[in-house]
Amino acid sequence: MAQIQQLTANQPDVKLVSLTVDPRDDTPAVLEKYGERFGANTNRWLFLTGDKSQLYDLIGTSFLAKDSDDPFSYMPGNFSHTERIAVVDSHGHLRGYFDGLNQNTASAVVEEITKLQNQTF
Image (tube, rainbow, N blue to C red):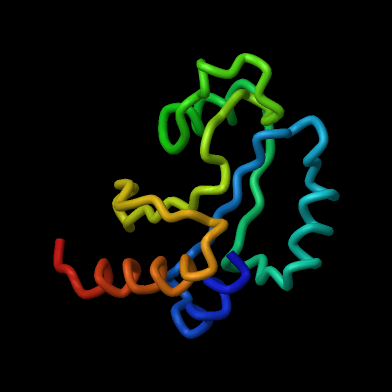
């Protein structure tokens, strides 16, 4: 995400959002320190936490499936693929997923953003 932020620095309309799956531990203060560690521009890169049930509902219905095959998953909420980066257009439509652990992901995400910016709706 830090690379994506750098690559889109001249595009103020591009917003980055990180949602926690562990709101008990990821308090606003903890997320603020995390953002500082990665040089987050908090006008463009938001770190969201809040009520666990609301977060899990949003994440589960919008971005990630629960891994029901692994009831002992180490990931809070049993979400699978938490490393994924989702690209969402200006209308709130999910446009694609990218593997956040792949070293080429930042450039692929920026390429997808560029495609979206060149489309007319």
